[in-house]
Amino acid sequence: GAAGVAIKKRLDRPSRPYEAGSVGREYDAWTREGILEHYWGEHIHLGYYTDEELEKGYLRKNFIEAKYNFTQRMLDWGGVSSLENVKILDVGCGIGGTTRYMASLLPNSRITGITLSPEQASRATKLAAERGVDNAEFQVMDALSMDFEDESFDVVWGCESGEHMPDKTKYVTEMSRVLKPGGRMVIATWCQRDNATQSFTAEEERSLDFLYKEWTHPYFISIADYAGILKNDAGMASVETDDWWKNTIASWRHSIWVGVFDPWPVVRAGPRMWWKCLRDGVCLERMHRAFDRKLMAYGMIKGVKPLAGGAVAAAAPALATRGVPGLY
Image (tube, rainbow, N blue to C red; front, side, top):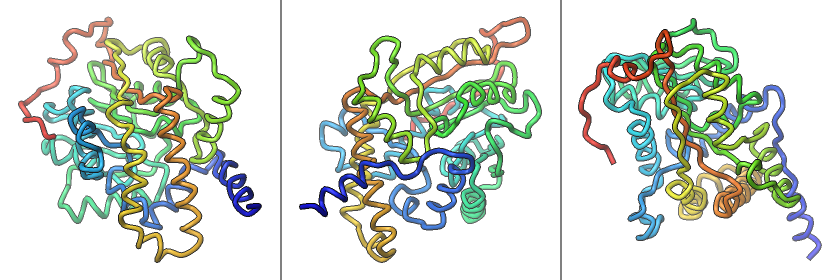
């Protein structure tokens, strides 16, 4: 009836557009509410599902375990898993799940996480203390204007933080600035299709606009755009990319189902949270559909900062490594 039409029109109108301060404000709210942490765990990013797990059915996999699997896969892909005695920067660390995971995996290294959200930094610090993880630290800092000196870190890591950056070029060049020569940059981020090869239709532009404005994203760019920024603006070498959409797409609907299977935290939170979670559920489904029809892609981008004189080949061996068994 009329009520249903009105609700649909309201749900089709994005409610949280990007503006100055909106990213930190929204993550402060999500952290205080605790709902996101309850369902998504300490890793506020998508999970990884092997082809075999997808064939069996993604609901057979533990949703939070999938996120740990993603982190380990990204560490392996980026050549980070076996490093020794390094300093790593986690740009957009959330409540520190990945930062603490790296700190535990690499006990002789120092991991620093930064976020715009004071609530996230506080929660991350508290969880590190509870777990006895003393080689991880967290700071409130703008990734586009970091306080760190040039060439401070051996690895700079950005997992699902680029989506919120209003200047993607500055995001990458600032990470490159604080990266030591020979160091590695590893990025995972939601991307949109490269419209240089296939222009967006009017309907696709409307769909993207909703995804921008519902979860306070200024805009997305393509995987090819990111690769170009790493090479041309940040001066990175050995740039490689991949699209992990197939092994991450299950996360969108899986996150809806974990709420269906365990609704009580939302039920107890009251009407305002009911509406917020309904909106988030709609956006999760829209994200699934956008990835499914290749309007969106899951971008994996990595590169090495050249040594003086542009040398790259010696960069990887310059960092001490150790053997680490695969943790899947």
